[in-house]
Length: 466
Ligand code: AMP
Ligand code: ZN
Image (cartoon, rainbow, N blue to C red; front, side, top):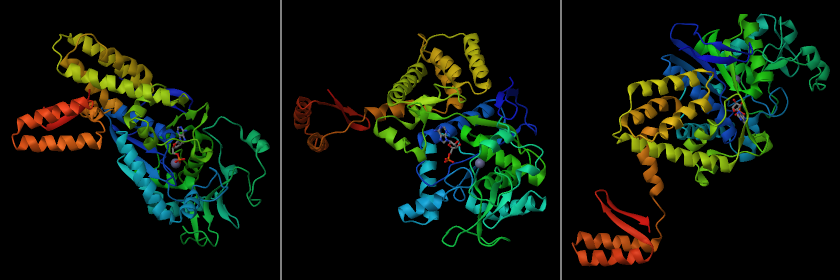
């Protein structure tokens, strides 16, 4: 069955055909590691996880690169403001490298909690400065770059067409553009590929233009070219990347190599709060840890993301996320019951479920429709091992770790035991070791009077609320 993907470049859903046999090359714009990634950011990576898993489910092999932006992303997505890394470093009184390491580690921990498959290559911008410098020189050599007193700019007027992703007309944009801060720019939409470092700037490298650092857009062009070649299959990011970051990546690749770097450009819509964007700069963000504190697992948030198609906005509420937590537990319970179910299910029925599921996910990652089929299976009156196996097969795409359902359900049953009860449990343990069954039973009754039931299992004593 063909996978259909919506391409922002052509504004159409297209039948996906890889450029090279069975291998799919993907580049995803990764996080800027100056702060905790928030659940809005993770909507973007859950989407990428769905894309990866669906392509794998269809038998494709992946070569997937994601960058970590640890230099050059200014406060605006354009050329204004301070470098986000340096600003955070000053605020936290650390070096930008310490900041980057801390938030990269946190980001990767959360990715693991979300059971998101890791890209084959994770590339840090600061470890690819020479690749970026080569690309900047190439752009200048081909006549697309020019030097001002503050930066090396890309001259967008030299391109046959700019912009190509966003539908807006450049003349209109120019007419509506704010007066730019740098009067040395030739065109308002020219952007910095390399920035001359002011005296007090920490992250800077030697270059033909003195001590300086790369612009944000350049890292993705340089690293995608290095690992995936001049043209690859799919480029992903959030919708906020369309008008500036991705437009400028395309400009750079066209300038240096005469080509648009990816065939398909996919963009995930925003997670919103109260109808507005959730973003670090607006200060209305939640983290995975904050959700966990309210009893919502990372995986429940992942399931929450499946309530909307990736190209539609999704409004976050705690009620909605809690409902997803309950739904996740129901799904786990269904899996557990089916795993020991003995009812007969005809093979044709299983095949029909599989086909419907495949059709949904292959239709531009339609997770809400796919979940409809998952629920039909999970809610089936009949319980059968075949259905449990089917749920596990679907989980190759969902990535909800259903195979470990029992572990999650059991860990939810573990409760906080007051110290008074814990002491009684310790005494009872001692009594049992001494084979003093009378005392052991007496303590058990005392614990029950205090509202807890003790059970003796192979693994030892467990305790539940009455
Ligand atoms: P950043 O760390 O700001 O570079 O963003 C990392 C990724 O998260 C990018 O792909 C953004 O487009 C995406 N993103 C940021 N905010 C949101 C949001 N509220 N909803 C969905 N994606 C987002
Ligand atoms: Zn990027």
